Image (cartoon, rainbow, N blue to C red; front, side):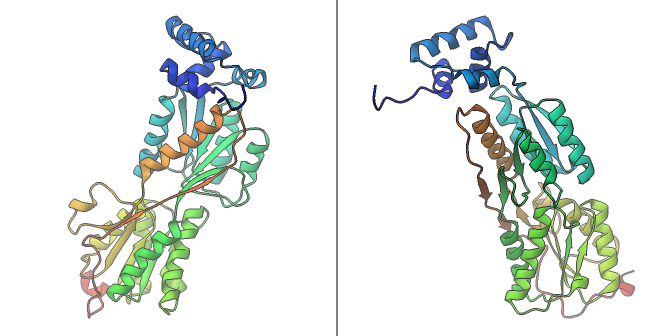
Length: 350
């Protein structure tokens, strides 16, 4: 009948009160996909609604493993724990299991793990890439692997990406320090491979340029995106430039390292140095002083990445890739204040 709505798998799932993945498994004839009673309910609902199984799609569904690879840069980082929880909670409600893998921010390991996921024949991969080049992603896509990038993006890669506006968020933090009166602001950042590191550094530069403040390359310190990387950055920067009055650390582990080293050297925050971090932590509000930070919607990043993946896997038509940008929140607390009239002396504090 002309104008009649086409019945979809999602319609059957809703009427049968099961997940779309369960409908897919039952209609594909996957043994043990669910209980006999549930399978019968799904089949009855499909017949009642007049759902017609696309023969090509059905043949593809028979090859599904209902597993998804999740490749993360550093699972010891609480940020990725929250992201993984969002991904897994969303996928398991639709009958998919998650295979977790950790790259330790190593691009060679990232490439190996992506190949391994393809060998394991996962249905799709969600990944936070540490790479600056896209060859391995393009190769996987060309081989039919569906990929969603989360927290990072790569140019000229036809995949869904779910990110935040890193440049604008960083600019807002540095603007705040400038408005407090700081001019010698150091940035502690990762090794400039991943897109978020590049974008956060660009936000720092943009803020300084907009206020006519000369950018001193010596105040830009790239290191491992770790606690030890943050400590090393502070040691080096304080030693080489005692005129610094504020630090902006571009991830949570480096912020913690920076905080630890500042205090270990006998300095106080914000009296001697102001400090702002990218990524909020649960204990930041109760620390003395409470840490000013940029908060990312971590759990939501994981949820939306998983939803985009499910939409693609369960759709009967190819979907165009989308770039989804979520908002951050700049949380002003007590770790940043106007600079002291006197520059702290490294010798005196030690």
